[in-house]
Length: 419
Image 1 (cartoon, rainbow, N blue to C red):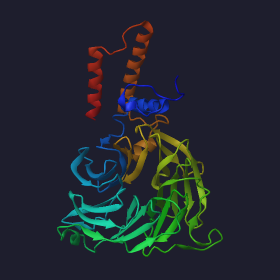
Image 2: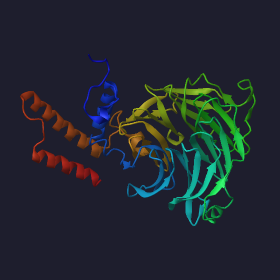
Image 3: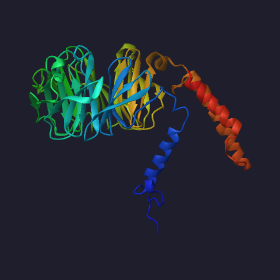
Image 4: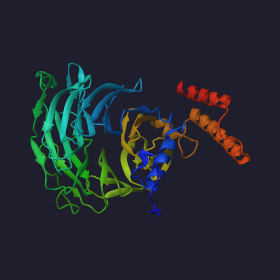
């Protein structure tokens, strides 16, 4: 007697998986073997699932990884460096202090973890922990640094936001042979009723900290002392807050623009908010959970990433928001979107970081799905081979490439590598 939905298999990896889960896994593995996806966005491969990342400069990024590590990546060589910051739980978020805050000419980075701590370390020497921020009673889920002051803000599953102050000079961090232990100078609690997943500082003054999470509300705090932001007008009752209701469930990402705020949610929407009124200006409807958002007001678009790995480019500056481009490169959830100069970057649970030239993606004229010319040629070649194979199957012939065809496909892939 078989159980509906159950999977009967002798393969160990399939144990405890339903037929639907196994089908999803096999689909993902097939996508990972797609030669187009293996090239699209010039993927930099990490040693584990990327839960978040931050850009240090044009050449360097820092990864938060699910294998309990934070790693430094060289964007020019496309490789992760071997040295790692080690935690005792998955690393959920990373941040980099301002360029003016350096020790021994090295940028200072921070990594937050399920182990309830935040570690402070040198990008040039990740293996040495300079300081530990200790104070949360549950997983640390998000991390923000102030752009001009040595302030750090952390959000946690314990429903609190903690404010921290690093030494005025980064050189003080490296004076002791043992990591400096730092305690928070402010605890914000009692307003959020769920886990805090995401935070950001306002772009104009960095004086307001916005927070959101599993309670689907958005709140605002003074970035100096943690007091609730006072708001005037009929839209508010003393404090600046967007209560649960517009978003129905978890808010996974929040980003600020000048005068505006964008949030992404598991309720399948991205919403633009007017900071002054707290009212929704625009709602972008998706077909699945939205995991990341990145407004790029300079070109009038918003980038969104979703649970199945797709990335969408929305035109939002002409009164009629719509998807103008779709990128199908990642094979698992998009976890983070960042901008640097003329490019934006995307990370995913598929263990890759990918880079996209904004002008190329937005200005692409080949259809809705973004596909660079050199990869379009490869896609056509692969499709032709696939079609020929299908015809062979219909005729009863073997459905494998000949030695010459395999060599030709390898040469095509090599040509793309050289571009």
